[in-house]
Image 1 (spheres, rainbow, N blue to C red):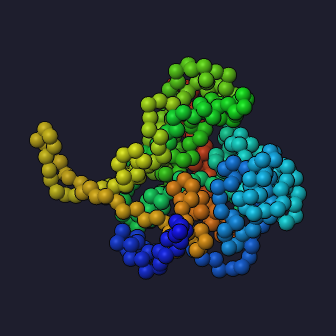
Image 2: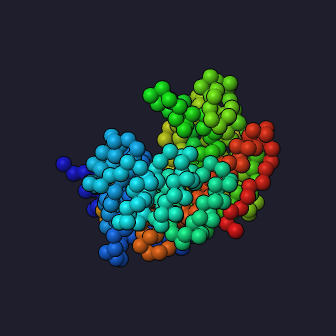
Image 3: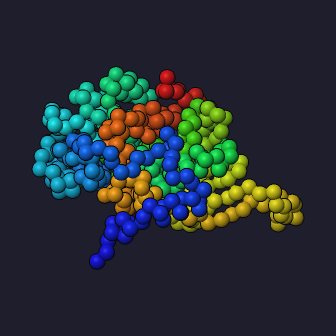
Length: 410
């Protein structure tokens, strides 16, 4: 029986160039939006994968420039699952033990979010390149500490933000590079995950998700803006909503909110409206919209409207009250499946988690190490995605106070 991988591999170069050309994309991307394709070296990066849940959903064992040298998790059953997925014989009971392995030169940290900062610092001190799940840290102090540690180490750090590599986001990056949007004056992004409280406890014990402030997990939304334009968020006003639920009581964050909505101002004077919600009569979604002076792009809503492209027009029409207005051109957007193109090595050209992003994250990290280049979501980009949410939550606790967001690029 023909598999999904079999059919995707038949998507050839001529078809890719033809389709990309029809959509107004050039095949080669500029430095900010470049993804490497087929490998140019036989070097193998020896990686250790840490965390037997999220860590099992990537494709290091398929990458032509990578070997999974070892895996690790505190729990035996998860170590065994990692070994099975990555066909790896070597397993360690902890990150600390894995880092002592001289054959491991890079690690993927897929541990619980509160541990990210400490685990990344420990890995850098051990001389390992690091790919880490989101977010980069919980506090501004840890953001600064990690930035300084990465600078000092000279090693490769990348954050595994999935939204940066969503198929429509890659398209938006290309459109922006080619000037199709004109001026993007507003971006909107929503991450709605109703029912998160079912993850608050496991086997009767609270997990790190218990009472998690929504804006401490903002990167699935902030990346929709920052990964396309490169702007930095400078100011924020945020409001939260809570219902004094018993489920929120006693949480380690002292957080009263289920949902938070923020308005950000960028360093170019543009706006970004972001909503992260854990509870309510909501349809689960992770999507964005880019509003430009010449063109706008609307990401697919899994519960409604598909991808749409809107182009400004001088043609006049009348609204339902009879007033004249300029009618924009609305067209269905035929989304390229970028994972099915020459942007990835042949073995990785298949569907993967979070809208095809996992194969891109796998390749971007390994290729950055091999070519000694900065990965797309380096430490500066990772903090730019994360820090605005930390300040936004403080704003919500202060009733929406307009607050300054520090810039860690310096």
